[in-house]
Image (cartoon, rainbow, N blue to C red; front, side):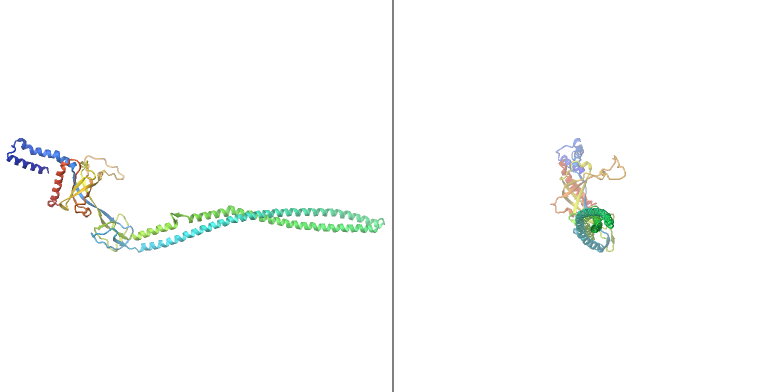
Length: 462
């Protein structure tokens, strides 16, 4: 461009000299060189950062199609380079094993719901058992009180019977003494009767008295035997009451130290099992539902669908091929046509004034002679030389001769030029210029230069 403007200046100077307007002297002879230096310093150098220009490229997102499930391909309904909509089937995997898993987990979900109901019933039964055991404790306490009262009554009856027996034994002892005295008296009187010292009637009276005392003694001895029998029965009652009290104590101790804690633990365990909830569902049901949802997801993933609007570059996949969900191995290459990115590489020395929202112009080899207007959408503030990757080696220090990668600037094509940015094919190359707020006088030169390049695309298409 400098040479072109210098030639224009030289032609104008020659015209002025021939017309006699100016005289050709040393100054005018050297003026083309001065003109070239002035253009270079005053216009073309500032133009590098006032209206920077760089190589442009059109990018499209590529999705490597990897299925989420493994299986044998049974259908490939998509054609290469044919547009498809988001959600259209790219290929299908045999769904038989995944349908079987869905059926299995549906049955497992029903079983989990039944198990949850059974756990609830078991918890209610354990709670009822605990309540029954507590009632048994109360009954055992009542039995213990009754057994203690019966024991006390039996001991009181035994004590009273023993008193009666002691009294009867005392009477027997008294009567035995009286009988002994009466016998002695009867023997004396009987001796005296032989000597006629005592009358026969006195003897009869003494004999009757002795017989009466003997009868009373026999009656008293019978009373002692009856009392002994009553004591035996009372002692048996006491022993039975003590055994009943011991059994009541043992039963109450067993209930309070063993049965109640065991029933409480069983009720607590059953209640925890029945109330093990995840949200509003029992944990067993939630786990079975999660497994069913995973199986249903796998079943749905047997139909591999387009992730967006676009097309498949090449279709080499055929029915019968077994595919696997390995991220290192893709089976189709899908081009997303929903979004196309236009990027331009600006040298680092020219990036100082580039900002978002500035106007830009773009020319592509694919469209010779055409200029697309755009604006700066985003500035990528990093280059490949500025990234630090995690590794086991020490990062290299900067070197004097290290490459200076250009910064990427993303452009947004204006919508009023009869072309949709998404229709631009990925990989289309060209050149773009960005017009900053600096050195506006150089913008005209840059606009001329980029238009010249657009028309030169007809001549030099490579």
